[in-house]
Length: 278
Image 1 (tube, rainbow, N blue to C red):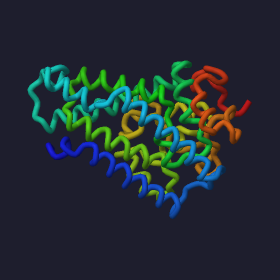
Image 2 (image 1 turned 135 degrees about the vertical axis):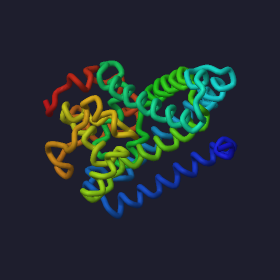
Image 3 (image 1 turned 90 degrees about the horizontal axis):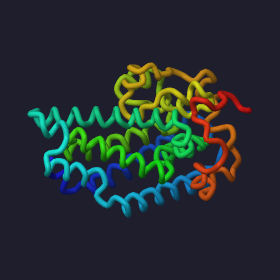
């Protein structure tokens, strides 16, 4: 696994570009839903958000989660550094624990009003596709990284586990946000192992009870275990409405309005906002 650490940046970048190109191609070949906005305007806004996030995180945290994992390993911090477990088991346990932490964080960002303000920018995209997977407010990106760093130190996650987790999470998040039509049987089998596009699309519904479900980005088990799993949207995938009712105008998805999103409108959490348009 040493090669993974030696070429970590290139490995992550190649994986990201390759999967991004693949999912964009599949979206064009087998789209699930007709889009309501032009791709050019959405991709411009989402692309700028992604670029801003990347620059801010690199400036504030040059070594990010991998650097924290190296530090914890060097000084023996964290549960997995205190226990005597095989290397492969430590990697597996760290991967699963990190995934649960991301799931729990996502749920909390929906339930606490001021965190929902920050997170709701992700939900104001009225068309969900592969670029939506990376459309998060810079404040949320910083908070998420700090939470992830804390979990890494607490459990003593191996460096390899952190690299693999971030690469897999990024790839699966792009997959399950993609506007791809999967066969019903394929989707039914896949969602026992990973979150599928149809499963996650329910989470982007404007209905309250659907927004408050299917919080997983990677492993689908947590929603089933904690009773937040919803199989299908009540309006059907082709007819369901995505996004948030109060932010549906074209200007709401321009870059300056997107970045100002946490400071606009009500701070109500997703668990208390109306389930249907006002």
